[in-house]
Length: 392
Image 1: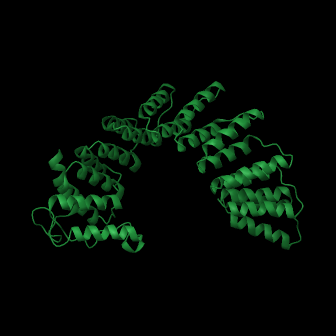
Image 2: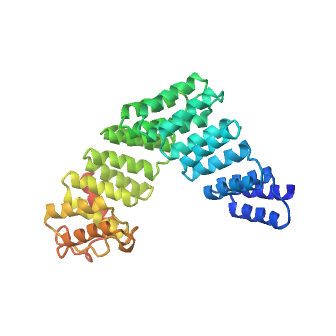
Image 3: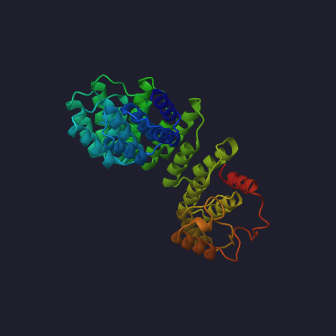
């Protein structure tokens, strides 16, 4: 028995849920009846493997085997529900625990709040947090961070900041993850000033903002139309010794796009190409949108051509921008490979294929810029260099 229980527990540590279930079945075939500890190990393995249905099935098997699930059993099953984004089942299991005379502990509540966060149920998350305190369970850093994130996803930035104050009152010092959740909450609710205030608090508290922190703060600047502040934050990332990733750059480009700063967006794209990270389709799409909105249709179409050369597929919004750009320039070009990059036509839904057809129709037969045909165009790098020269 102990041998099998240890093997199943080891499978859980390695997230090998399927092997854990095989071992459990092997026990039964060997006339060994799994006990509560064995089942708990198997449920935990399923939870770590994000197999919520299997975890719940094992919990049912325990009852049918006349074994009483304990707090550990429920904690593992609720955690599995959280990872599977089944918040309602997590709440049901919590109620089932109480009905069975079991007292949920801090892990139970934290797992249930996590399920509510993933299910975007901020009201339930706050109710559970309050119940946790009433029952004498002290929330920890992870619990608060999760509840703050839940409020953020529900556009409840004020609740997020109140929780930040509350955790300090309980003697808990927010860490980077907590601040990230609070800044993201402000970003989603268009509260860029609050987001930057939290970033300043982090520095004063000797917390080093990470790339995720900066991405959320830059996105907050985008929603507030603060493109200059967004670029300052991007420079701050580099000054802190961190390498800006794709998300940081895309957030900064979006801020420039919203504020019609097409030159700045184009410079950021150039910087990405020269220093990394390599721009993806979404990077190009946002710069193209910035050029179209700023009445720079020629540049928008040239960038679209570069996307094609790099086999990066535009999204529907970019296709719409291309249609507008074609109409503004009254010039057209064949784009037979327009969507042959990240999302080939066969993988697009009907509406996206309709948009593609519109672009190809709008761009048919005539070439973009100075009468150069597709085959005669210089390589993408050369075209991008020419674009860069116009905004340097």
